[in-house]
Image 1 (cartoon, one colour):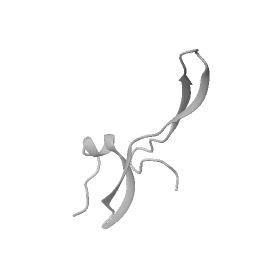
Image 2: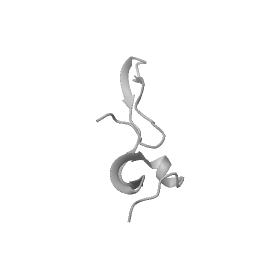
Image 3: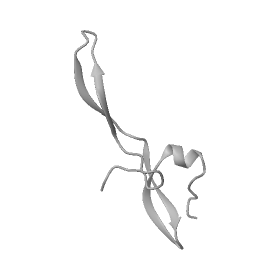
Length: 63
């Protein structure tokens, strides 16, 4: 399973952690994904959706 939003395809982004001594090490910023039950086509399905899509009503939860 890839760590991506089902709606907007938002995925992890890489960057650097900078310490007090200004040493840089690699890190990974993960999106806030939630496993929700939504209606895809005519059937309910469990998919991973980011909280941005949930808050902006791009997704309707299945009853």
